[in-house]
Length: 322
Image 1: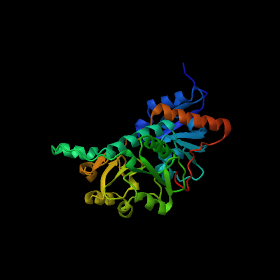
Image 2: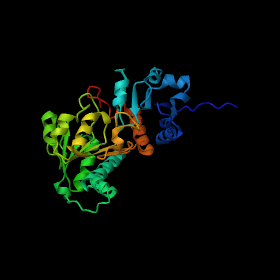
Image 3: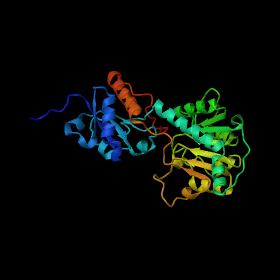
Image 4: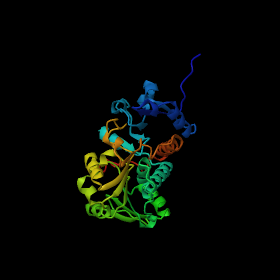
């Protein structure tokens, strides 16, 4: 006895990595649609389902697969970062929507606070002392005297700022365009970047990767920071000129760097960051996407589009790259 396919809309899920299109993802997304749609991996779609698809859910997909969906109007990314998607999808007619998940913002803000405290309380220095069997306390600096700079003041930056302010830190920030966040000394533009870096104890990178921000931390800008300033990168690896950062670490211009993202991931075993005494390497864990919450956001955005024809506010501006 044959079984007919369901009459509900079927949405394609496209991803290069199998674990991003497996049953755990398709089930979580289908469940989030609450009986109004079914999500299937691209490879499991029928020819008819591919022909009818107007929106697809993607996680760094193969662009060639998207080209086989003739009615496709827009794609919803499962990730907040979309620079690879913007670069690879050369179809100007195809709208891109990035994930804007409040739960992920809270998780990222938690990581910003945790690793800022790690640097603030001199944990790398105490770890070095332990390896050398040195019993010595270091001078304590109150949080109110520590200047934390957020490089990137979008939604993630604003949520992280609130966590840092609640902890008592002096918080300042920089963004390409002017922003106004209560309690945060906001700066913008080239002059603003120079000004804010010159008064930074700990810099936290949360900005998107665009042609304008690639290599934004280099020999010149790292040299603007007070000697011994520290750095956290939770954004994208290519924002930093790696050779320049290694020079700054070797000279003591930068005291310590917590790096969660890299130009190539996984980080190669021979990469100098692994063994550098002034670097903490993390395996891209600062802002993990949680299936249930991200699936709920994606489902709500697509259902709203079905009902109103309106794309979400997290629609990507291709001219800015995010």
